[in-house]
Length: 318
Image 1 (spheres, rainbow, N blue to C red):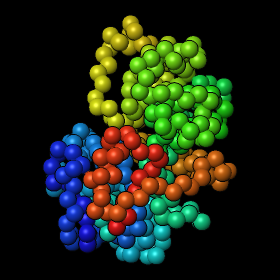
Image 2: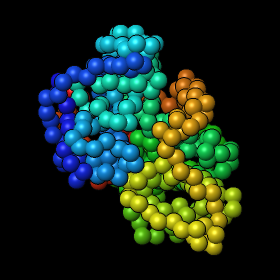
Image 3: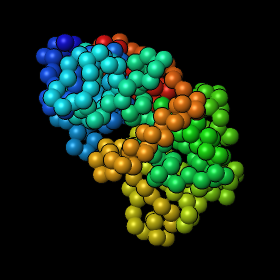
């Protein structure tokens, strides 16, 4: 099979298209013929070696895939021919076939194509977990969503509005129309040197900030009751000291790693998925067609995501 192999820890430019053996599913696993693979910031972190516990080169890259089950290992509990979307944190999705843990897949919703289901296991549950069980969002609160034009940001804006929040969103100016169409109440320039001042001109402090690109959130979130949920490393590692939290920013700083959420609180993850599918049934979250790249163009897709010039979900098509 064709596959994109990460050959170094120097970034996505070192993804190489090669021929690899088709993997075989073991107990509790399934083999999926990939029709679309999601591109995520995790893939970029792994390519730079900044993802804790990430794979070591050379490895087949990609953590998210959708497609058709073609083989089932013992006790997997799924059937050949089913269309599913799933996640494999150790990599393998940027290929024509991938092995996925059966517990880490969901059926593609009726009426959706496989590419539209990308995000169901990564971006959307991340946004929902950040807002609800971890962020404790309540109606009438003000939510700050950074990188609001991205796949996770778009979901967060829609979900926050559905639950009665006022949404302040940040994005680069060329993406503002997209974010406004999602329902954001205020859309600000993420590149502005006055971003902190611009946010505080709209509110006396936000109640909840979703953070992956900048720590502006510490400056604009309400003291004592405010919450900042950090779910990514898009801008690298940002130091926050105990002095900062005691004397400068007295707020709740919450780290979100979806894999840890699944591992340590599977019941909570189950509640997130149940709520997620209720939002889909209610039409709050609707399928969107991702921007697709052919598999050999994977390095360009990841580089574009890393530069934050993209809008919405990106996918590779084998």
